[in-house]
Image (cartoon, rainbow, N blue to C red; front, top):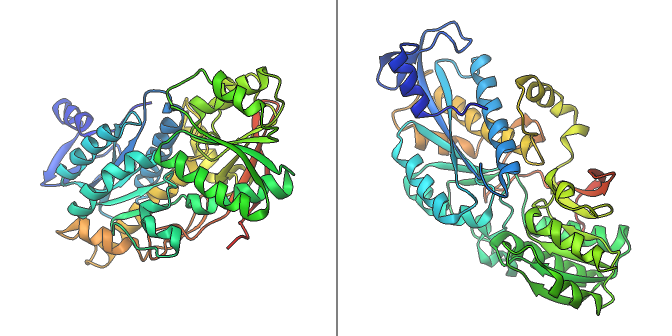
Length: 410
């Protein structure tokens, strides 16, 4: 799928398909608006577009692009033409940090969507905050990203005024997973593993705290390297504990072979994980995925009336890669920036303010709209106010929704 970028715009200028009419403005008769002077607003996008996690990243990119195309087609913000600038972070924090600087240096970028990984986000948050540039993630669930480490002791403090997210926190996801596994799946003894990354370790810690609070028993714990694919040593340890389930804090490239090797050893117990394993690639990488469990934020978009148009438009756009579990959340994250731009323009006599980044940041805390995934708004930490979760189970090699709700633990 074509990626819209400043390079592409430069090439279009050279080819004569675009005509600059003023600094920061252009006339584009191909944007579906019938032409006219428009100010270009660039929305940055960051996620892994190559490598093991690219299945999720590509679905996110396509969903962000669809939001931008929809806003332009509908002329949602009069006088504004949106452009998406996607960058590949390869799921590497150092690359994400470099990408953040690229976005910051482009004065037309008024907001950035992404990234996928919480540990990548940790390297991007401060630069964006220092530059006053809005960042909104559809996938970061690490609670400390918004509330700091103090959330564990009830002393949450917002870390960065520029950071928002449409995904709920691991504090909520871990509690939901623990309740589901203990009360609904009936598993009382669990072996716990994490990949030592920000997301995986945080999710595992939240699961452990809530599972034991319910009366469940953690019969063993371990850490693995997310790059490893041979887990026979840890599988042998699990076998000795009598575990009824394995909870894994991490992502699908390692979770899939871990699950298969667990089943190959004769242990017919489910692996459960968070949204990082709920990918269409998981059952493709795991021949024995049947019965495994995962949780993800929000309800399945396929079951939401609010998502019907998104699903139809995504299909009509002809994207080769599926929107995956973060598609609707990414569309809503991108649309949040579009809504903020609309507010900023509306409060400035129909023109983009000279300090567009500040105006968009000021507007972000005020936006409320009905999104693909439901009502969208943000609390005092920049967290989504939608804390609904869904538990999924692999049935016939597909993630099938089992139950949606909210955790009841304090």
